[in-house]
Length: 376
Image (tube, rainbow, N blue to C red; front, side, top):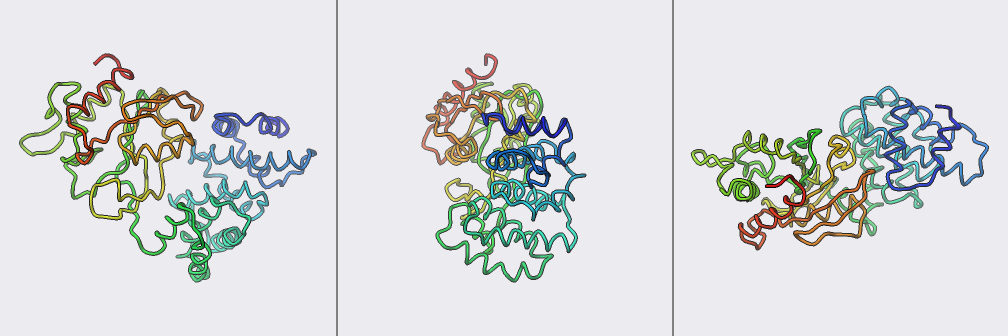
């Protein structure tokens, strides 16, 4: 695709699904290098200044979406992004470049040379100290600095100063990063998302309990959580249907086969948390990193329904969707996200701490399934 054609696409109206659409164009037409050049304004464009800045920001925005659509296809262009990283002058571009670099470092896809690591650290240190930097840029810059500190001695030495800089009236996002740097244990989600292309419904909780409470290696593993009893009552009129009575464990194989048959996918809304207390309560979970919902939906193209199971999961999804519309417990709202219209149901928690009887929870979930699945 010629550059002028891509520039015109970038200047089209910024509507719902814009990033996803342009990201797919970058992937399909292999425009990674062009997007990086436009984001850093390497190529001079005979456009008004405001349009040049707009093109830079939107090129970076499209590049981030392209990156998360297919990280493997981005790999050959990592060196171009690293070289371009300190050259980005547009503060809106900084956020998208930081998100990509942070993810590459976290996932070990990027193992920078010492020279590259030093250059990246120097750049984010400047952005972190810039009073005009956006909060998201400061948060991501701090993350990158922490990730590079083991390799770059001077970066490790300035971390206390960075912490002091961020500690002045921190936003919730910055406070989470400060907690991480001050020794609080961050837990990574121990399970992969349960996604398959035929799924039409995605059910999301918050985060699993500590593994010592598990009865199986799957979602809702705690015997004191009633999710699989709710499913048993609804679909088989038997609360113990998914329970192995002899071992007092849930039967993972039976649950997985049933979910595939019903086209129900599962994940949690957080990928990293700080557990403030050693229990299974959502009340004491601090979300460090939420899921990339767009990436998950990309893997389940037939999905038209989101279901959150509890208050913490619902709050997180509301933040991801950037919507003021929140469904009542047991009800739903329609939301437009990632280029599709979705029904979002907010359901009562299956935890026994939630003050509702098992039978009433089962009835609420049954009504939801009657609206979303084939007849029960």
